[in-house]
Length: 207
Image (cartoon, rainbow, N blue to C red; front, side):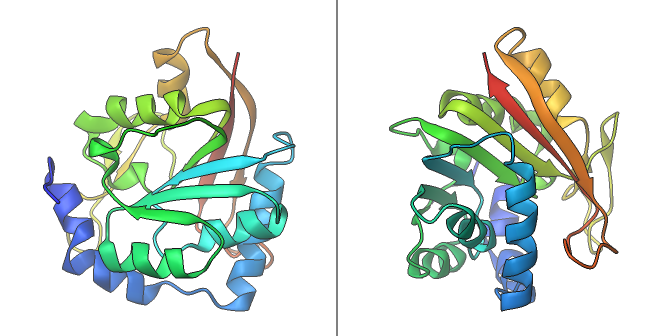
């Protein structure tokens, strides 16, 4: 697989492998993410199909499956071993691919991206926004670190690897009149039930 940005190679390679080793699908974490997913999608039901960009080892895929066992899920993941492990869960069809070279062959009730936009080169964000929009026939879920203006943050000693901005606002502006804000919220890292990072989520709906 060829890569268009340094960030892609970073996550597809050794650092992505190390990140995967720090992740877990322990029952308590899956239960916590299921609670979060049910909360984020409370105004999106019914969701019969979903597509995730950057699923890692499949935590969100398992949560989606628990929220709605009949849901049809597909996903892409840039790290080959992570994609393989996610695919083996048996709850989704997972392809090893970069979003910058991926053209969805269909549309889904829900497209989603969680903790991935923050790690992308800001120059490619419009292309990723376009994939999220074009592949959705109804809802788009964003779950990322938020900041009202674009900022870069040092990430585990690396520069150019973590960014914060108003992702939802940028999508609403890019697809002016074609998207509306359906719901949003915040999960605090000290919440004993959510057990999530300090992430802000946005549910957008196509008009």
